[in-house]
Image (tube, rainbow, N blue to C red; front, side, top):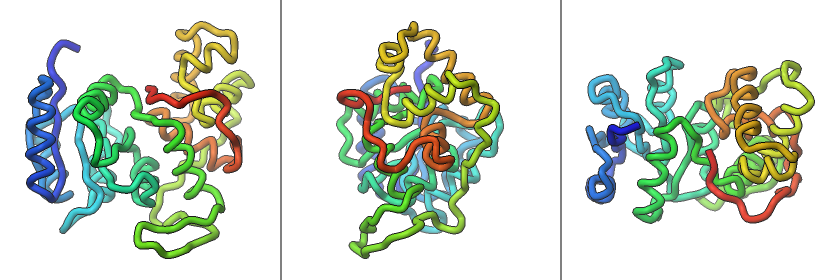
Length: 248
């Protein structure tokens, strides 16, 4: 793609939006609009036609979670959404990922990470930091004890009643595709999958694309969630590779 990415900023803090606008603009990213709440973001998407929306979770009038649901209607021209949060285990982030967000960033992200994230999801890849995403899914799809952002100690099933389940019938997947999905959910990148399975990286990408198509999933983030929700990978599974990387 030769055109610069088009980005919509949705955050109720003016200083945050201003800072992100300056960072993105300095790297050639076109900020096409700003929104101070979810309702403004929903209204702005068809008007500004962004490639990527940087979406805060906690905003007045309409939060980022509801805005994400409304924006991602399933149309082919839906923008990619990156959730912004101050907590890497925020329960709302899990719900947003289930709804179709392409990844999440902590608000203390570096300028380089911010622009790289926008360019990554703009190409159709998911912003997937395997270690964090796997831990997030374990806590909310599994049965581990956890502490909320407010400090309360909770246990048992952690899914909110309005959290969209991504359960899929894995029967359409071949044995090789099931193997790829299981390793993907444990945090392996495409390169690591290729090494583990003795395949070309292009072949791995083909397997991943077929998994997403067969299961009707938006990207790798949702594939990880499905792997845990269906029990293909258990919440206690360990990472099967070395240092995790952000991988689309």
